[in-house]
Length: 343
Image 1 (cartoon, one colour):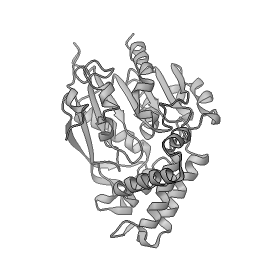
Image 2 (cartoon, rainbow, N blue to C red; image 1 turned 45 degrees about the vertical axis):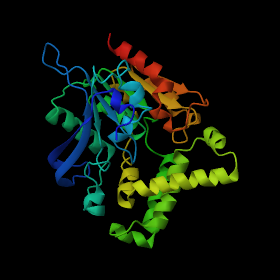
Image 3 (tube, helix red, strand yellow; image 1 turned 135 degrees about the vertical axis):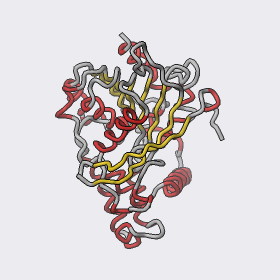
């Protein structure tokens, strides 16, 4: 069933692109790597025959392009008159390697699946655009969380490929400190469960996966809002149980290990001077994954020639890390970025 938002913009078109003999950063190869995607709208070519209205939006860890079709996100951006009106823009929503309907360990290879990295995920999306969709330039590259980190990589890997960049809920440095510890804890808890069986389980390793989900719950937490939503012990227990059930129903243990560990080599900081397109980096002050007190963005954004850092203050509307998917909060900055990059 379509959401209310999907009834107000062109119907998304699903597609798949098979990359033959894809070589990963580890030098492993996969005979066939499938990249699934959805596109909304139609490509427009300028007088030189170049598509000039393409927008790439990349999802977060454990997610897929489908997450952007929500009433909150698409219902504000993709609808007629929205900042990314799908009647004007050609929007591409890929499922990253290891996510959604793209190739992933749970398809059959299990822990023998190539140990992909963010670099591989960006490379695959680039090949999807250039080889399959015929796109040689993007009006905008943006992403949330992991997709935000991919946005930084797009900026320095293909600096002439886009007019503008908007990474949301991310930092342009190596995944270290508490962020890495939480990821490693989750991976360890899955692998410590005897039911995991080295990844060859027939049923999900419930204990290990439950422990890993605890790390994920903490990462996406929003203390102010969660206190308001669950002001009593009973309400807090109920809210937690609901989140745990939701994650348990959607996560595969092997896929989750790969998804968490794909960030292991991520580190844009030595390359930020290569970014030339206007870039607005947006984080929320209540983001437990990227806490502002680290002062990382304050330091690193100075390396980006046309970069700007926006720190959203905590309000009753922010929701921690998940603020990245609420354009009613940061939409005005997207409007400014589109105007600035159109000059």
